[in-house]
Every structure is written in structure tokens, then in C-alpha cells.
Length: 244
Image 1 (cartoon, rainbow, N blue to C red):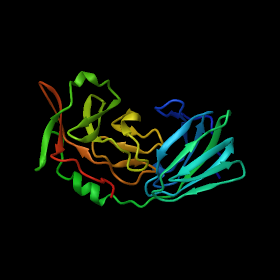
Image 2 (image 1 turned 180 degrees about the vertical axis):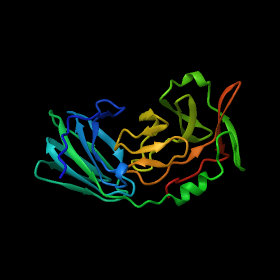
Image 3 (image 1 turned 90 degrees about the vertical axis):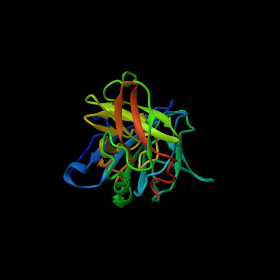
């Protein structure tokens, strides 16, 4: 048996305001499991912008308050005594239209570990070497990045997360493979970036997921530092549907 309190961790704050705070209660990645449980507090008048949960199903259990769940043109209200099951890939928005905060627990089922396509795409893309069909694109000076920080850049039609950790500079597709939100809005530490939405973690050097609920890698791009600053090797034309 395991009893977890929902007030002793380190909640992640959404980048938008008024946005939710998200706290991971259970993360079984360290022991080889996939179960993830998070607690989300949506402030009065706040919302969690449209997102999905990739290859995971998600069970939402309200603890206090009331939320409107919007999926396409469909709307449902959940409150204490109700639960909502979100299907794989279903895009939803959570809105608190009341004057009180709403607290909900989200339980994620294991996703399908479909990393083959992404890993194949990343093969041969070692730091400082551009594969055939790629070109170097300037990404600004190195000193624009604090250590353990990330920024979003639109480079040659590609949304790119450029991050710096332990003195190294990395570049990856700026989209979480689980929640489809920008990874550059997350926290960076020890060579990893953590998505603010559900707490998925990815290795900056490889794009591989190192913490659930994500099971699919994120494409990474080679980086080199020149006298002019950071350069990122990107495909000549933007790729469509990286997780298709």
C-alpha cells in the first residue's frame, strides 16, 4: 500500500495566466513501471488549454470544485462524485468557470511505446554533424540562454526548443510527444527537460522519454557553436506530423 499526499511535492506552474498548477503524485518510471498520477489545481476563471495525452488514456477524478471539459463541440461538467475517461489522442480543454479553484486527480494508463519511427529519424544525427538533406540554420548567440533554461524558436519553418544544460546546448522539436504542448515552457535540469503539463521528461541529447506518461521520443537536431553563435541542423523543409 502507498499513501501519497497532494501537498508535499513541487507543483509545476502553467506558463499562461491564470493557469493551473500540476503536481506529480506517483511516478513509477524509476522502477520500470508506467503508472503516473498527477494532481491539477485550476484556479477560478482559469483553464488548461487544449491538449491530448498521446497514447495514454486518462481518468479525471474531481476532488473539489467544478470543471468544464470541452472535446471538439462536446461539453461536459465534472465535479465531486463524477469521473471522466479521456481516450487516447482525444484533445480536450479544461475550464473552471466558477469563483472557486478546482482540484482534480489525473491517472494515466500505460501508453504504447511506439518509438521506432522517431528513433530511425534521429539515427546518425550526432552533435555537430548534419545528415543528408539538412542545412545549418542560425539560432542566435549562446549568451541568450541561461544554464538550465530553454527558449522557443521558429527556425526555417520548424518549431524548435533550444536548451542549455550543464554548459551544453541542445535542440529538439518543441512539442511534447505526449501532451502536444511546447517543451520550451518546461523545466530544464541535468540534461533533461520536463513538460509542465503532465511531467513527462525527455533527455535533451537523444529525445528519449525518461519519465512517464510519455512513451514516444521527440526528434532532436544537431547543434554546433560557431563564432557567430548557435547553429541548428534542420531538414530543408518542415516535416509534417512527427508523431503520425
